[in-house]
Amino acid sequence: MKGVDKMGKILGAYLFPHPPIILEEIGKGEEKKANKTIEGVRALSRDIATKSPSTIILITPHGPLFRDAVSISIEETLKGDFGGFGHGDIILEFKNNIKLVKNIINNSLDEGIMVAEVDKSFAREYGVEAKLDHGALVPLYFVDKESKNYKLIHITYGLLSPKDLYKFGRAIEKSIVDLDEKVVIISSGDLSHKLSNEGPYSYSPYGKVFDEAIVNIIKSGSMEDIISFDLELAERAGECGLRSLMIMAGIVNKYKLKPEVLSYEGPFGVGYCTAKIDIDGTFSPKEPDLLQIIEERKRRKMDEIRKNESPYVKLARESLEYFIREKRPMNPLLDFSDELMNVKKGVFVTLNKDGMLRGCIGTIEPTEPSIGLEIMKNAVAAGTEDPRFDPVEEYELDDIIYSVDVLSAPEPIKSMEELDVEKYGVIVSLGYRRGLLLPNLEGIDTVEEQVSIALSKANIRPDEPYTMERFEVKRYN
Image (cartoon, rainbow, N blue to C red; front, side, top):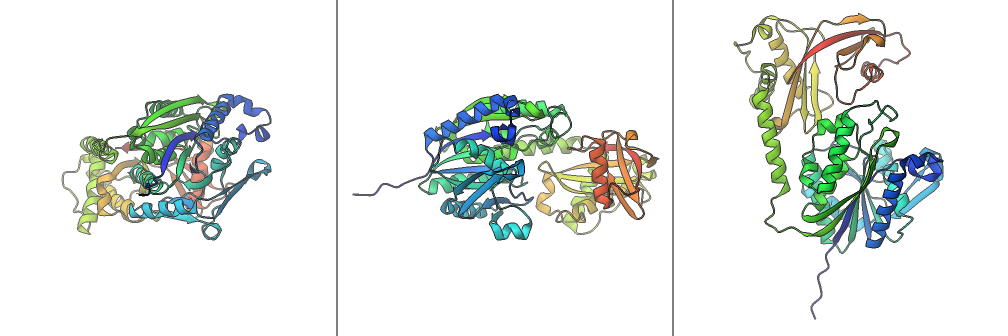
């Protein structure tokens, strides 16, 4: 008699918010303001119990976070508590599924996705926590009341491109199918933290727009819309759940999906959504590859950006592209406009890739005979000399979006009341130490945040006698 080949199976996927305040022990009555969310996570937990998974794979924003890698816990036992929220007595402990973890790591590396393998030794070396974070503990607190007999895999997403997060999800799906495992996926994440001034950040109108868009996408089960979501909008909304959903999209994309949003509400200025996605069979092999859809959407977007870029941005782009490809600076063009040719001003050139900063270098005051030459020099520097990043490589050039900020002359100010984060940039100075922050930056919503970041860049303490200047910019895209 021939044996029957065993194959792993994904039983379903879930979106859990993770505010510790919804625990009765921590909320002390305040949790009642999020009653819809509590009912939602309890319903999700009961649903997971009915599926009886052998393993739960949980993706969190709040574990060890890296710019260039995802993190996976590799300790035999995964443990955490709510000590950071005044309740070290609430302890959760799980067995890790080491066999599946190793399979995920190997398949991820085959896809070119870097993986940080987190144990206690790694945590000490990199100054991160090896224990379970609240992004994992809050969902598991509720799940654990309904289910006990499962192993856990603890993953922290990285600040990777949507394409790489999707590929990592595909690697997870392949790893599950290759082993005899019955798995559910938990994407842990809150939506916008800027729904009101009651939240952890200042109010932003983008918060509601982001939340409504994500809820509608989940309802439709449109995974390509998760992967191609506007990262600029997400940044302005101040969220922490999108990248968890991007990985989840990679895991479940080959399947027919039956999505259901159980609840959405925004108490405390933060958006909480509970949702489940049941698996309803697999697609035909003839279904289009989502990566191809993503790449086509991206190509059309970049074509539109290039077609409409200003002469300032075109000059910055061509200067960096020439330098990377030819290994030498581009000769100055002779057809500069009057301002580019004859006016001297400070200029900042900013590079973004996949919705994230890729480099930014600028001059507060002019160092070249014209704005045009200032742009050319700073564009090359932004791509090759920003100490926060590796130099731009040729394969990246088609994915980079540029902006150019031309600065007005700085003027001294006496207090923060003379600042406006959307209109004015700020310069803080103390002796030779100097820090600058441009205006109208994503995620910077208050003057206090703006000045605090500028002080940090200058290595100036807030209690030191620093001076401030403000300046306006004209931004070109």
